[in-house]
Length: 193
Image (cartoon, rainbow, N blue to C red; front, side, top):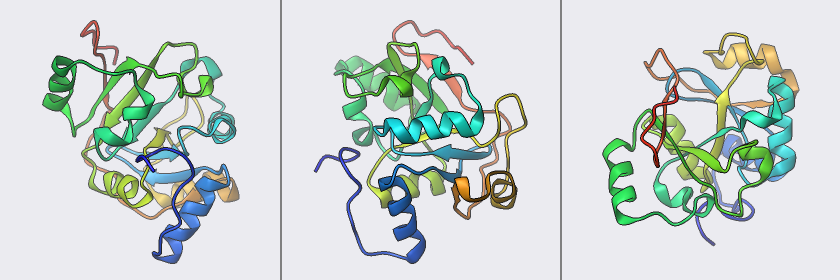
């Protein structure tokens, strides 16, 4: 099975890992630590789960969401084929706090990319988020853990209080970045955030 495609594999592991796998397999949402805050995530190919993330955040459907991964292989199926020059350009920034807009493949659910033809993806340098993607064998949707327009949550405790049983909150520590990732359109080179 390709990394990040199809259902999550059933591998032995801790109880929390097994609960996390089940949560994602069942179309659920998780909260996990990222570079600058806690993030809400789910399987990037599960439309039902993506809609749950959008509903929890009260985020407009047309905006689209970011996907993070431990390496490019975990997002390869989400983007159209890239040239060697494009891959080399990405390698200059990844892993790191840079999210790139890349042409979305046909496999990307419309709920994930919103009204856009591109998908926002990042190979994260945050050790815990990257390790989570590796352990789960998949990329993850990654959007700040908060309701739209409110401050991003920074701790597992804050996530548990805010989301209760709507979300499986994982323990972890956020990174030292104060701002969200920089967003760059690879094709034009334009910095969007």
